[in-house]
Amino acid sequence: MIYRSTRSHGHEVTAAQAIVQGLAPDGGLFVPKEFPAAFTPAGLQELFALPYQELAKSILERFLPDYSSQQLEAIVQGAYGSQWDDDRITPLTTEKAGSHYLELFHGPTLAFKDVALQCLPRLMKTALANSADQRGIVILTATSGDTGTAAMRGFQALEKTRVIVFYPYQGVAPIQLKQMLSENSANTVAVAVEGNFDQAQSRVKQIFNDPDMNSLLAQHDLTFSSANSMNIGRLLPQVVYYFAAYGQLLDQGAIKPGDPVNFSVPTGNFGDILAGYYAKKLGLPVGRLICASNKNNVLTDFFKTGKYDKKRDFYVTNSPSMDILVSSNLERLLFDLCQDPDLVKSLMEQLTSKGEYQLPEEMRAKLDGFWADYATPEEIEGEIKRVHQESGYVIDPHTAVASLAAKHFKEQVAAPGPTVVLSTASPFKFPETVYHAISGQAVKEKGLPALKQLTDLVGSLPPAMEAFLGRSSQEIVIPA
Image 1 (cartoon, rainbow, N blue to C red):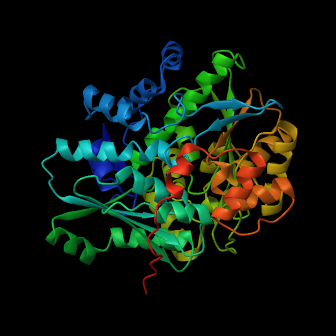
Image 2 (image 1 turned 30 degrees about the vertical axis):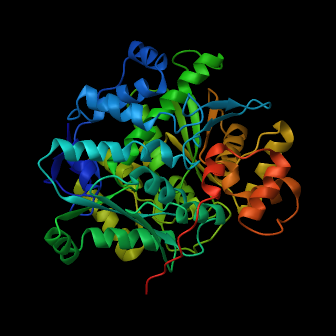
Image 3 (image 1 turned 120 degrees about the vertical axis):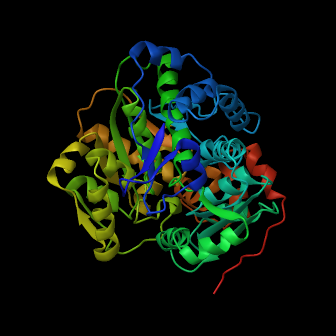
């Protein structure tokens, strides 16, 4: 399979090259030149009977034909093994009130990023081994919270690979920061930057495409790559858990084969929900994809008006991983809608120069598979409290955004099929917000003391959380 840039006609690479490069030289994102054929209904039924590892292999091999069957088998077995605390990898929980939550936080860093970032390093290592390229790789990544720790854990001690994570100073939750600074592998480092996630991500893209910086790396036999969802190797593993969710609904008797299922997705950089869009293109019976945003609701306005406008106040909220105004993966959706790299390039240039762009009407008309909503910080806490009171189930702030959007969707839209809420992080990663929402009282102290208060209130810590608490932390580094 050949991959191409979203912004030009000429730059084409193999799947393995796309994963190693991360970002196209023209600043675009890699997408399949021809999307894989959809699974037949019979093929889908066979998929739903597979354990998660084999399901992942069956989906990834459609996108990654230059990896051998044996290599993909080793990759998925290594990525989804004993580091997960549930054999289902992404278990579907149906709480007492009947709502479905797809728990994506059972990996080593307790966030959905583990699903991809346990897989991506193995994909990258295999790609390098298959090629004659012996250069080392410098992974540059911006994070609004969870990607940083998951990338550092995934790439730890990987030969000829270094990881530099940029995060907004005072822009991630205390426990997220503790996790990042507790990753002490010799080849990883987390660096705080003044500003917000969008600014950090923009600088990463600038560094990627800086000819002087790339020349300097070449002199040292190194090259850049990315662990953000800008990397197609980060995105593709996320497609798998939509199929896993559907299969578990079948097992529970909640649906019959072919029934549509809606998915409500906490959305910041648009990678997670784009994976659901790709799953639908592969034949999964997806009804509507609910784009759930926080107070930084640029995507809500986009889906309602067709206008993307980042010229607005940036809010630091209680769902920090979604504090984003420039959703990079939306570019892949735009390309899929128009198949015109010149138009996509023009829209991205307008976003950079003017801070906004307006979709042509024929493209906007193709967005009917999406529905959008957002939640304020107060509404997030209210949803955490509501879900806990009704069922005893505890959700994190990002999951609460999607849970509330799913509730509003059910009230406002007569859509067939159940709705699955993607639960993207453990509630124990955000003890300050969750404790306040459930108890009505503020924590006595942020960070680890708050974590103990929440544990006393709702139950014991996950093993992965206990594992990092005793580690020493790196110092916070803020470059000039």
